[in-house]
Image (cartoon, rainbow, N blue to C red; front, side):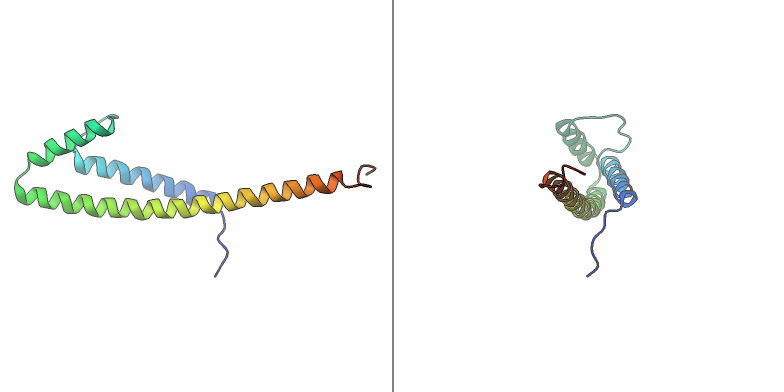
Length: 112
C-alpha cells in the first residue's frame, strides 16, 4: 500500500467541494434561501417548503436530499482521512524537532 502523503491542494479542493455540497443541500431544502440562518430556522424553513409540495414532489425532494447527504458523508470521511494525514505529518515534525533539540543539548555538542 502506498504511503499517504499530505497534499495541500487536494485538501483545499476537498474543502471547496464540501462547501459546495453544503450550499447545494441548503438549496435543496429551501430553494432561494439567501444569507445565513441558524440550524433551527433552516429546519423550520425546510419543513415548510416540504409541506408546500405535492406528495410526489416531496418524495423526489427526499431522494435528492438523501443522495446529497450521502455525498456529503463521503466527502466528510475523505476530509477526516486528509486531516489524519495532516496530524501524522505534524507528529513527524514534532518528533524531528525534539530529536534535533536533544542532539544539540547532548554533551560535546555545546562546543559546536
